[in-house]
Amino acid sequence: MIAQGEVWLVGAGPGDPDLLTRKAEKLIRSASVVFYDALVGAGVLDLVPASTRMVSVGKRAGRHSKDQRTIDALLVEAALAGERAVRLKGGDPSIFGRSQEELAACRAAGVPVHICPGVTAASAAVASLGSSLTLRGLARRVTFVTAHLRKGSPPDLDWQALADPQASIAVYMGKQAAAAVSSGLMTAGLAGETPVAMVENASLPSERLFRTRLDLLPIAARTALGDGPALLLIGEAVRHGPLPRTAERSATVTQGKPISLAL
Ligand code: SAH
Image (cartoon, rainbow, N blue to C red):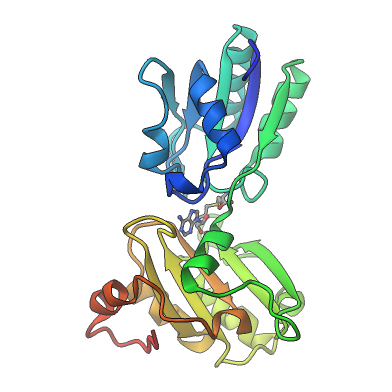
């Protein structure tokens, strides 16, 4: 499926291998080398044939094992050497995936490069909550933001523009910045009772779901979330929904913790 000497940026989805697209699976199976990062699910990596060379370029916030330029260079080098290179990225490559650097590096080197989309974490998280990112009349738009703290300083976001009670906000990389997100949005006028869901390890067996409110988000994030990737979903869209299938596990995990988790 992949020609000699090209690169595919492939969305690996949120972790559950059943959420891979069929195209992604075909690309994984026909690659000669697979570059993957830390967010790619173990079940997805299991689909890579044993004979395929695998290169970890593992990135998690604050724990970069290879910098972006090195990754760009590795992809270009592989393709120029005639490899069928797949660059697996968690979720969808186009959402906080640094794909533009890799696309630009390939294009500058004359290497053919293509993209296979994937299921982004926000879609997986809201599916697990049994809800919807948009709701007629209640949530008219969805904003994907990243609240990654750069060198510990608060995220530089336009809180005024974000604080729309009729929007759903999906905060990627927001765990450390939960307090800044909460105060930024409330100062800009969003109500403290605004519903918030925190979804850790969405789509994986270790998934955990929590419901809280904007004013309680700092303590909720600090006490409830573990080490896994977590998404914050803010807005009316996450108020409702049936009890999620992991409710029991989540309730147990949070027992005795001083947060209001109306699961
Ligand atoms: N391209 C990815 C996002 C990369 S940024 C996508 O489309 O999903 C990394 C952030 O994504 C993590 O810090 C976390 O906020 C979120 N994320 C990725 N996988 C996740 C998962 N399985 N569950 C919850 N959040 C996840």
